[in-house]
Amino acid sequence: MIFNLTSDGEHILGNDTIFEGIQVLVALTEGDKEVNINLVDDEEMFELNHQWRKKESSTDVLSFSAEENGIMPGTEHILGDIIVNYELAHERAKELGHRFEEEVMVLIVHGLLHLMGYDHEKNASEAKRQLDEEIRLLNAMNIKSEIALIGRTG
Image (cartoon, rainbow, N blue to C red; front, side, top):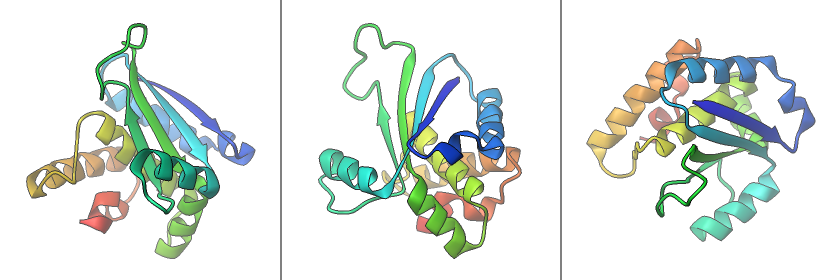
């Protein structure tokens, strides 16, 4: 898999821990599909969550599958986009007592699994399947499995 990372916060793009985590994901995921990861502030995430999910709140991560409404010509190589709220990631990391970089990677893994077809909101069995894969990927990055996003939200 190919990952492209962009951010409106310059300090994030120079973060070696996040780049190392993405390199682990490249090694552990199959295929040559492209995933775009964009780190945005809370205001932009609020707007995206409102526009696409009709929610009047921000959220921590959104994923948009390029294949959801059929593959458009010329985009066969794209799996989709992951949008991470880096301000909320910073708050959650502080609240839960782990590093900001770990929280960002948890959110990226969560969004990636959605792009790969996992859907924890479908039923308990699917939630367990996604949690197991989330834990496998986090463990490979030496991130504690206890901070897996699905483990927090059921």
